[in-house]
Image 1 (cartoon, rainbow, N blue to C red):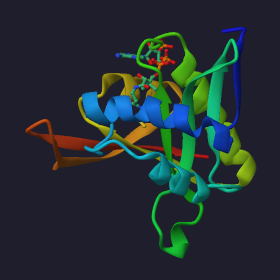
Image 2 (image 1 turned 120 degrees about the vertical axis):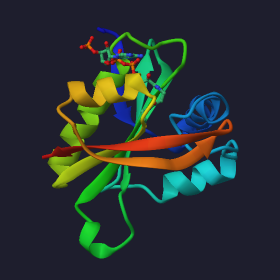
Image 3 (image 1 turned 180 degrees about the horizontal axis):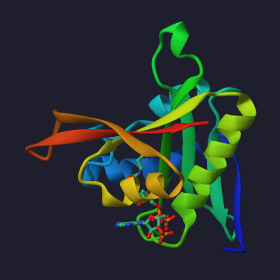
Image 4 (image 1 turned 90 degrees about the vertical axis):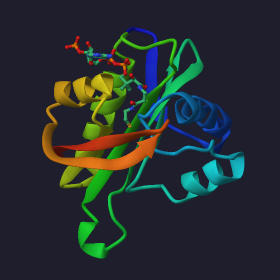
Length: 164
Ligand SMILES: CC(C)(COP(=O)(O)OP(=O)(O)OC[C@H]1O[C@@H](n2cnc3c(N)ncnc32)[C@H](O)[C@@H]1OP(=O)(O)O)[C@@H](O)C(=O)NCCC(=O)NCCS
């Protein structure tokens, strides 16, 4: 997509990032969060990221239509070079290559930072997320059964891993 631009997110992007995310909180099992994030929670989340854990925004024609992030996988120090990825694209703009572009960009950023591995924690029913991770070379490495419950049903989580 020629007019697609991926850059580091700024504080000014956070309301859009939050709206993009909260749509899925309310409508999808792709996130196990069940209550929308407030702007304050989103600001705290953003502040907890930074150099080793970037947040990115993707623009089409100057409008932010998706975002990505590398977050700590675990708080214990020995996990410092392992990150979890997040990628969210506006629900009206799926299947146009935006998610793959965001994830490819995160993989390159993770390599440049010096991370060792990226893990996606994916709800087992999310074909799109599984597909985009597979496309970028992630492989399933764990399948946890019925560890989530949302919309009155038990949910399996698949871990997909990329060694860098
Ligand atoms: C997952 C998500 C980011 C994918 O973004 P997208 O822009 O729609 O995906 P792309 O157009 O880049 O597609 C990438 C690949 O996945 C495939 N794919 C996308 N959606 C798919 C679907 N619903 N079923 C099967 N394959 C799918 C595409 O065909 C493409 O593969 P190809 O290049 O071999 O054809 C998007 O669906 C989304 O925002 N979902 C909600 C949030 C989420 O689940 N995030 C991931 C967990 S953090």
